[in-house]
View 1 (cartoon, one colour):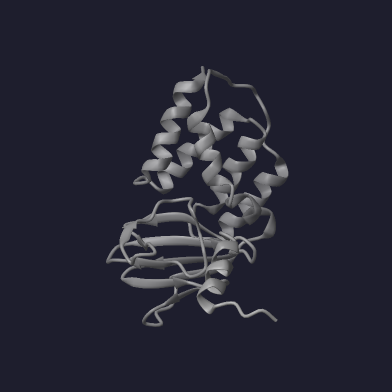
View 2: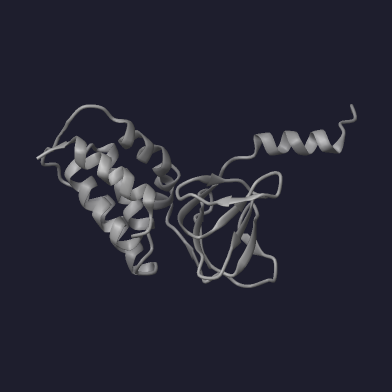
Length: 202
């Protein structure tokens, strides 16, 4: 067998690693880049196993592993290393909450970031039509709300994705309002909601 230097092997494994971890909510959390420099962690980005996060006092982050549905909420102070199936805190501090999301719900969460970008980049005016929300989607979201914290974003982010795919713009706008109440400091949500309002025809 041909010998492959371990450094090159490590780089190859990293390049093929899936971005399987999604940030649902972040407040004051920082992400370390490859140079060890900290930058502000943005919501809805996808992360890799091996990425590291820093949570100062009063910071918070909600993470979901799409494949397994593992849902973790962390509050600062904490320093996290993301593994393939969980986050590891440098001082062995436990997560504030650990849940497992149902497959039907988590399958949509990894798409939220690209959906928000698409909404911002849409051109023209949107005609609002009366479309009923899927009863199945609503039932999944309602069940998740019973199992998660009251301010958890996962159920509404799931609904937002379902409504976007159905082009149910009236419901999309209502879900944005709920999300902004749950996460009022989220500038990304505010920017997309404002862009949508400009495009929607009364």
